[in-house]
Length: 294
Image: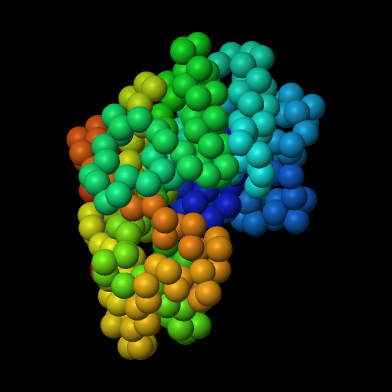
């Protein structure tokens, strides 16, 4: 099995798959020599290669029966040359049996708070989302060659043991949120549940199928931060009007406050047959509190 983009979620997925137990042989593409000891310690064999250097990917041809693609696109442009290079490398010899790609629910753009299932047409509004749509289209085309490609669309990923993985720092910085009449719906998934979804999708994911990997919290963003503040024993954030937001909120964060949608997760339950360990953010955030167990 080959993991491309073996960061936090990749390492969690490796644990879910039984890395180091002999149940599965895991390989991970890495362009950083300093990452190799950590990968080996996790029971993963590192492979030198860089998605931005197509020539370095030649050894990937025919190397794995299953591929987990977690690498993000570049930080600019509207296309994903990294996924294009990976697909070309994998297509040179015996094709993998399955490939799972971790995408984003941002491909839908703003849905004005409507419930969204996987049949909804994509409507990306940002370059970041356009890059993901391009990657998905490349992988769907790859799937038509006989590879079972599953696309997992995830919302915000959180976990107490993940870098910037909880709202605590924003609460400590007293970053305001939108007032109720201007607020947007947001969705989340605990990093451990996302890793479990990646693992099971390698076998249970249906060909050319997209699946939402989200919990059932159904919260507006301000309510999410109020919930977190109460759990952490911190002051709830100030509520402000959208017209005031550009003066108080960084542009990158404000961009997330311009899209509102709620995610249907029937396919996650019925097709991947995954029962989340953290069905809402209340359980997931509480599990990360000192003295608590997941």
